[in-house]
Image (spheres, rainbow, N blue to C red):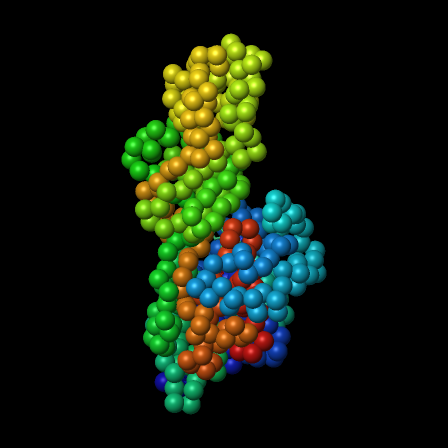
Length: 397
Ligand SMILES: Cc1cc2nc3c(=O)[nH]c(=O)nc-3n(C[C@H](O)[C@H](O)[C@H](O)COP(=O)(O)OP(=O)(O)OC[C@H]3O[C@@H](n4cnc5c(N)ncnc54)[C@H](O)[C@@H]3O)c2cc1C
């Protein structure tokens, strides 16, 4: 019934990183803002992020840290609302944070500090957040307004912002909602795949490597397109750790990855030098100075690692070096959306304004955050994209 419709200027679907940032900005402009979410709490992914400490941004951000079919699209938003703008808000709230490797900024205490800050800003801007709300149908009226029917009633909005995220971690209320709405309004969606996700292994490798669960090694992991230097981690399910997660966003099914387990060392050189000075020392003794002991018999075989250096030929040294510098492994697949940190693909950037995130097809309709085909590397880039794109939409919606 028209009389029961709740009228608003801006209706945002998704009360998490991108949606809350947009709500704050639109609210500050005096717009009446309502945020709807089907979850029972706002910002669930913020709370679980960064191991509970939320890697909320990175000091070093450029478009090269993002994956998209349109690699230029993210530039405008990232330059209009930068990491320094977000850091300024974090400073204003006196949230303690620390810089870790690769410029990553994490909360010192808890990710809840970031969510509390966003909610406090929402409150100041009179943003109305409604949770446990199922969205049933969205229609655009002849008067160019959006009618949204939900389990919490009917809403009518001038601007509709979709900030419903991607498909990763369905348990955390992820849904394909945003993609469906985009399609309903005639948008093209780039196929979605899990990103920043551990690899599963072929049955043979899984059995062989199972006993290495918990072992972590500083490595360079590469595919044909890119390489990352960080830790890899053997798990009981396969391969994880930051270097693996980064590469997973570029990996294509069936592809072999290459792992250099000793990027700073020339293994042949090391073995020859030690052979000259200590011919009776065992291979495993020398290599366990530079690699976890458990790794050696699994990768090189039990018999060779027990040999003394004088028992091993130079040709064999080269083979060992090749294995350690150029270990090739073909993942079976990934752990999928169950554990992926992000979703690659999504709403085609070419059909959105890079300045405002507004649809080029439907005026008043906006897409922000992870639902858009912009995916960041591990390291705070995905949140920065959510803050930047949300801020941009919040200036005009
Ligand atoms: C385990 C984990 C750790 C992470 N850690 C980091 C990190 O430290 N740093 C970093 O930069 N990135 C991190 N990320 C990625 C980051 O969390 C996301 O990129 C970011 O949250 C995306 O923000 P968003 O607002 O677009 O979407 P989301 O945060 O996913 O929010 C979408 C919101 O929409 C709601 N929603 C979905 N469907 C519907 C529907 N049908 N109806 C109503 N509401 C709906 C959801 O309930 C949710 O509240 C992590 C992700 C995961 C899974």
